[in-house]
Image 1 (cartoon, rainbow, N blue to C red):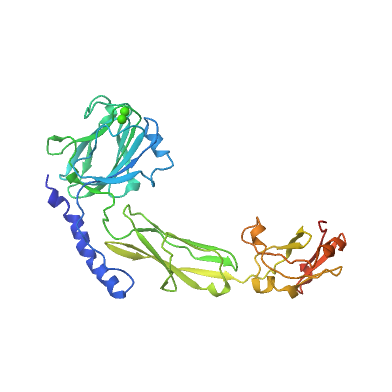
Image 2: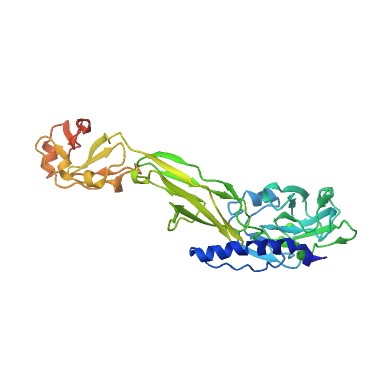
Length: 389
Ligand SMILES: [Ca+2]
Ligand SMILES: [Ca+2]
């Protein structure tokens, strides 16, 4: 099968990226990474408790694709064990390293339905369906449905092609197998696993497919930066602010829930890392517009005879919102404390202030339309009708 020579391009990739790994170790922010050889095989994900015979039942299941019941590697052949149970589905993925250049023909056989996809290169996004089973076949029975057989597909020796099969079992017996006809003659059934690398194999350093975009946000608003990578193998993310790693910022998306004027001009970028290297994203600049609009009173109401809630049109700083001297109420009602009212608020993202009246009698004796004032801004005064005892 010439499997050793077939994997040479992958090994060259590893060697060429050893230098990158050394640089990272010296710079002190990255652990040493092993460049170990990847054993041949295909990644399998198994999804239990999904009824139905049709592959669509698998792809529509909430657990698909990110929450399989278990994962393993098929190390013998592109074929699953027979009679594993009922009501399950599988996704089998990897990279096919063609042993010869020329036209290949693929077959699949399964109980119950299955689909085979093949990409024109190592990118999963370019996969297309080349064969399918839409009714149970016999075990390794290749000729009961025309759709079991692909059209001839031209592949180049040593190149890698993303390949994926989806299987779905309803009840009764179950199996899934593959077969191919080789360009230089002969067929193999099932196709030996030595021709594949598992989908988790890093083929190169991270491939960045979306750069973070610069943003302009008003003070107090939120900012979101996002990067994307096209790798099927796991990629580690590390966001930086002004070249300093941000602790815990290890997802493809960075969310700053509330930006301040001090964030103006800050530069954000992300490092994407896998065992074969790393890539730095472009820098995105955060521009913060000062909030020129003072908070206004949105609503005043009392939740009891001794608790009045003041709601503002935007978040307010606790140093002023919780300052008792910033509040006044007419009719001689004395205010005791000011504090957060957020626990009773359905208005997420805004802060409430909850002054307390001096006594039950105070609010009960207050005018029907009581006047409130917050701070020195005339627009921040208003009236409300107290709810009585
Ligand atoms: Ca079955
Ligand atoms: Ca079964």
